[in-house]
Amino acid sequence: MGWHAARKLRKSLEAFADVIAIELLSAARALAIREPLTASPATAAVSQRVNAVTGGPGHDRWLSPEIAAVAELVRNGELLDIARRYVALS
Image (cartoon, rainbow, N blue to C red; front, side, top):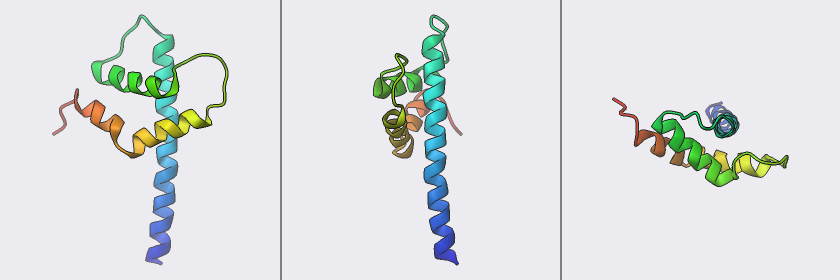
């Protein structure tokens, strides 16, 4: 049963990374639309990286490749590393 539970956990974590990617993509788009209002330095840096990978807001388009690109940034920890540069975690 342990092997099966581990596989289910892995699938759940993969799906969770996709959910986080969708949330980050939505937040980055919202921040871009709300300019000239500014976000905190950490949020702005993460948002800039997400928009650099996805192209930012624009015309209607298929979002699956953009979600996959942001999910990869979540999975490899790049966005977390960017946020850590600005936030002191104890």
